Image (tube, rainbow, N blue to C red; front, side, top):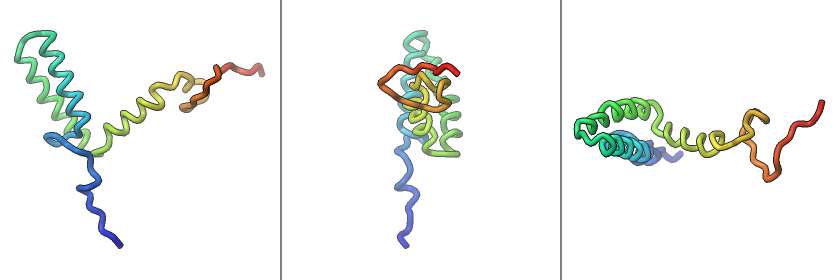
Length: 97
């Protein structure tokens, strides 16, 4: 059998969190700093980074799973109707019982 190198299957990380999570953290912290104008608000990045680090420590692909859920179930307008993500070019309507 071929050995599986776990390091090759992990996502790219910056300071221990996945790249996409780091980009969202950096953008959010920067937007708060620009809105308020006080450089002390840049320190918000430290606790946010710690939380993201703890989340990604359990499952390195957690943020990929969240983004995939947002792209599928999060966008589906008829989830309540079908109980699952469903896509159709036709409008949905209930049948009379």
